[in-house]
Length: 186
Image (cartoon, rainbow, N blue to C red; front, side, top):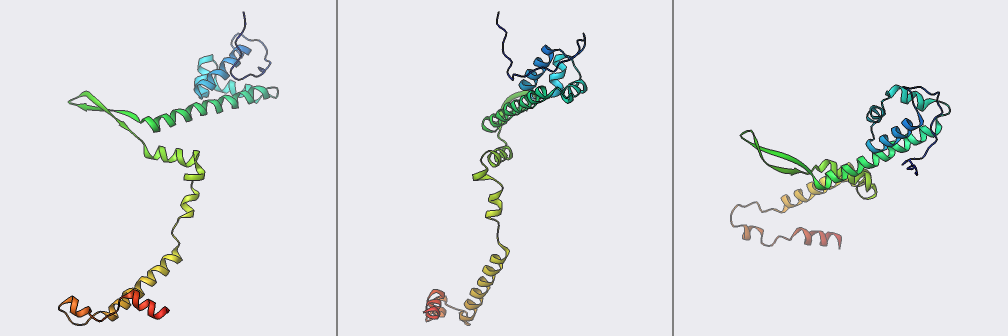
């Protein structure tokens, strides 16, 4: 009869045998449950031990292998959580529709903030926070363009006809701003 290898191999912390204490089997079960759930409280509950005793076991000087397995299990649990979050973002979350107290249907809610968070963290080269700084408006450039716009408006106002009436006749003989610029620059 072959024994299954643990998901995260490690050397259990040597402990004095007690009927209500940590055994090698409980340590392996704790690490595997922690990898499965990603929740320390749930892993402790399933093996029948307290969180404080798990932390004491983790802090023992001879518990370095258990600590490494614990960290690996938490990372594995976070990987599972990350996959669940991606699935929520892509598939959405079912939200019920009620009519007169009865559920008559459902609709899918797609969380745009969650999608943006995933894109910014998983594809930072393309969607990361750096892009906010790269394309942020430059206050000096805005002032300069505002000043240029004011000059253009003043130039148009100076050349505008003073007589109200037929716009075609009033503007006849006046050069366009492009022609005026070309004459000045050329």
